[in-house]
Image: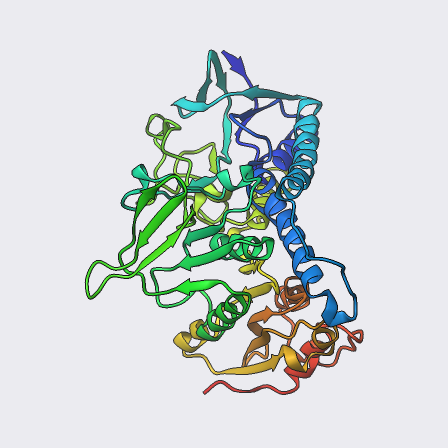
Length: 457
């Protein structure tokens, strides 16, 4: 048995930085990784997919070149092998840098293999038995694969899409949320026919209805077919031909394509860790239950990142590591509940989101103010020829503090941060309203929008 001060299982966004903090504090740390270093973000999520989004944006811009007075001789062609090679290079550079950092980190020992608990303080990795008074779980999540007929049909997930170096003639996507929409738009821009199937009445249902509708219009404008209200989905077919049955009663609909991407959600990688031997509790979906400082029900064990159900974003996972380090090493009582919900949807134009939706504000019953502005009235969007989308902001009428915002438009994922920072400062909206922003930008219209607030009826 090898003894350490801490064991970190998984090298997603929380684990490596936490290892750096713990080793700097003098601890002997074991880091366990069963597959690729960097977790979802580096290997199958943010970094590779946004690299492909950039390629898709270049293809779209090239196809629109004549609108800007730029003439391209011949048709625009996409070389999917080169798209994949570029994506692989960017992802590999990040993964290899992270692996090298951990391997050469003083007081850190890296173990390759699958970790399973043998007791609350003991973990087995292959033939190695490790023990430590502190164990941190950063094991991530994977695709939910539970549709009828999937065992009979070849299909892709967000992970296996990373191996695609060809152009699917007709890509069927089941799931109308972040993963499905991002892949759908990028492959449409590469040249595939794309059909997105969503069981609910609208896309990205966590958003307000006006945001969902605007996103649908953006995708349909580019030739993507959207099938909503697909209440009973099952699949059938064979290699090169996939049929998706969309209804169980009331007259069936069917979508046909050549390739199938399943993007119906994620589930935590907690079913093969021996959690029962450690006495750890999970909820009905398998997420490890934690308190506001990410401690589990077992003293000495923490759960960070996607496996704890507290965010499932790269930035929230990284923040989980910061919260744990602050509490253990800095005497700083940071909490999960201190952070404000913020995220992006990386279609083009992107959606930046912070805080509450309009629907949530209405449900709360609080007195509120609302401001809105279409991208057709934003100079930067007009200049770039990217006027789809809008921005919306919600303010508490009594405290004057911003409680939520959506920016769907060019640079929306960046512009949203000026609002987010003001929310963290708990400052009244008038601070930003009176700020002088730079022209011409998307952000310059946020103070203007705040000057046009109206009661939320």
